[in-house]
Amino acid sequence: MDFAQISREVFDQEIGELMWVSHSIGPEIDEVVNLIYNCTGKVVVTGIGKTGLIGKKIAASLASTGTPAIFMNATDAVHGDLGMVCQGDVVIAISNSGSTIEITNILPPLRKIGTHLVAMTGNPESPLAKEADLLLNIGIRAEACPLNLAPTSSTTATLVMGDALTICLMKKRGFKAENYALYHPGGALGRRLLTRVEDLMSQEIPVVKETDLFKDVIYIVSDRRKGMSMVVNEQGVMTGIITDGDIRRAVQQYDDIVSKRAVDFMTRGFKKISRKAQIDDALKMMTTNKITSIAVTDAVNGDIIVGLITIHDIIDFGK
Image (tube, rainbow, N blue to C red; front, side, top):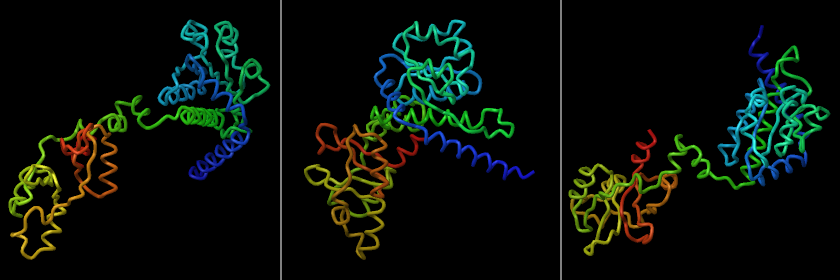
């Protein structure tokens, strides 16, 4: 058997079924999005078996993108878990056939509780579809399973419909990266987006005077191990920056480099960033300008330099 070819056929078939479901999406998705967006309670996703596993993922995706959501196994629901459902909640019930007994058994009590019901099913004529307030049709033509029995294309369609719903709600809420980070503080993205420049910056800033000779600048830059030094004038005002790159360019430019002073080869228009900025902003600034260090300014008075952040500070933080 050519299993590579069989695998490609499965991909092709499931993609074809996804396109079929995609073409059936209509204005009902707008109604579902608005229903959930205006919900004062939470979203309860319910299902059993393999669709239940997909339901868990949908609930997790919603919860992590700004929509309060939980998963409730329909079998456990009839044995007490219905207690987690409240009046005003939106229940998304998943059943490809729409006739799953565990699902249909909980429909009457859900109505008594006072929930809104969204059916996610492949059978618009099923008991679940007829009982629901709104219907998301995930009907496919055939499973990828050669026996047309094992849930394959149908569960994929359910998963993607859940993803579509999640993304629609993200756009409706104007959900941004910093919001995502708030719900993922333990991940690398979350830590990066929730951390500010002031959390990583060094307040020990290497400094040389404008009148300092080249050899003195080299000593400070090397001794402080920051790969740079700020330059101050006679009044103590920072007027420039000298980096490893500035030193290399000066060596190439001047034959009498030993007699040159800091003011001769410093960079005057150096980059600055507020101490309250996110480190992701600092990283973007470094990448865009091809630099490895940025002067950090006070959040209130942007002319006052209070620290320094380098690419190594950010890299070490991400480890």
